[in-house]
Amino acid sequence: MGLSEAVESVLIKNYSNFSGRARRSEYWYWILFSMIVGLILSFAPIFIGPIGSIIQAIWALGTIIPGIAIGVRRLHDIDKSGWWLFLSLAIIIGWIILLIWSIKEGTDGSNNYGDDPKK
Image (tube, rainbow, N blue to C red):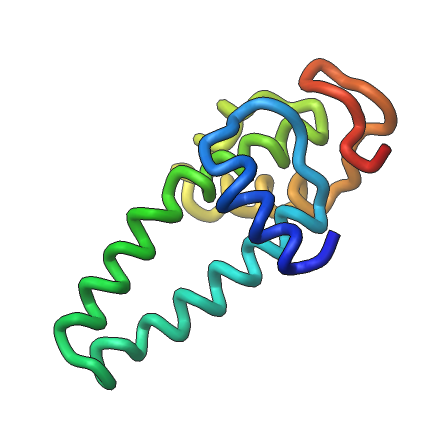
């Protein structure tokens, strides 16, 4: 899965889909895309004034749900419940655990959360 396919999958096909599984490529391309857009929009208030802040806020609010949904689906791919995403509230330790899990390859074949997205 490439960058454009991942963005389309997260923003259009699975905007608020918390079920199923997400491959590593889909998850990491979404993270890359979100960070690039966020970085670009961080300069928007400098170049276009207060409208830039509004655009930044709209982007942030508009990507909260798909960001959580892709995180939940990524956890499902390694056969973990989406509730584990709450580990991110345990700032450093939780982030490290979630990072390791997000790097981990998904389970082969079907698991409790659906069929293997690679097949």
